[in-house]
Image: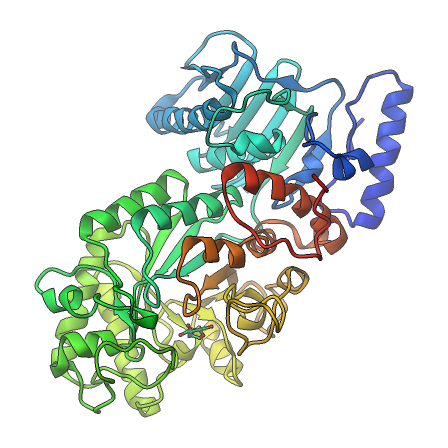
Length: 550
Ligand code: TNX
């Protein structure tokens, strides 16, 4: 008696669920309710088991099982099974999950290698089908417990995020929940893996600086939705945000300000390492970006000798214009500078990518621009990393140069991108009109910009990364949602732009295209509001989403 849920359209899925419930009820198997009107209309927070039909991003397949599911208790242990070579990491993931469950429930969640049969079990299983991949997992729950299996620790971690979503929203509370609901997981079998290998979010810490703790809070939000890359925009006209040995003016001068003239800030190497570590523990890879040759006024203010066009503005530059600055694209002093910066970033960054920007350069002729990007790209390759560039760098992309393009504006240059794909390059889709989380929800919205249009939740959700732009099949590595911060100066404001749109982008990146369905998505998203409130995350209560009345 199985009902495959994801992968079917809502039209087919709804009746199938109803049919399954009726058949199971008729068979006297006592299936828990799947989705009823009381879930959304309840005057009190939902207390019962949650079903797989509420997982965001939607899983590849979910099957509502018979029986009452599993209820967490004082006795629930987290077992890591036969741990093998990667045992320490599996144990760490188990400890992290146990820690998250302990806070609201107050239960001890002992992490053990054997122990009682019931409980939560995390098990590596190399015998799972190869298509499960590096991030796929299986999760099953019944009266005995919850089992997550995966081929890799990353898969176990992603499965753990699904388990959080299968519990009542108050499981996200950072403090003990008095009078908590029964902490129950519905009986379910989930089989899951991502559509795309790259599912990113970007934070612009250059226009406004955000502290390590604030960036870690941002990571918490991303991890819930199975985002696996965090792109940090570390330099721009208004500020430079990372310490580089031998280049003290970058931090003494370049980091001293931000948009609006407030003080700015920067990350020491230890700060940056801490962000990388925190991200890694949640299976996110940091992609640092130093934007060159444009967006470089903070560099020029710090080291004026890197300027040969007179493009610098007086320091500090606290406005929000773009495209005016450039480092000298042919100067040897500039390549010495980029070499030092790249070497340090490569040393501090365990991930495979370094982003070299390349957008909005007005002051450099195309040939000089292309040669500059190729040479900086070669420096990144020599440092052992793959250079990533905004789509303007397409003419410099291919073997020996930029290896991954981030598509954001197109602006009639799609052919350049197609040509680069012909040279073996892949693309991350960040179309500004769909994925830029700094765009306003609607024209009258107080925060954000409008140059790429307005983006409500529905339009953030309703596109296909493979087909929005005419690109050869198989060339899209994934999606990324950038959050530029010209108008966003506090973590509270970041939240208002991020939630509820980030989950829309996350679902485009993770879930099978065949299951995309706005009507179903907005229902699942509505349930996330209570989860964010419990976690202390702010969000914009857009009227497009049927938030339950509380
Ligand atoms: C365009 S996207 C930019 C940024 C701005 C952003 C604001 C890109 C590569 N360049 O410099 O912050 O628009 O939405």
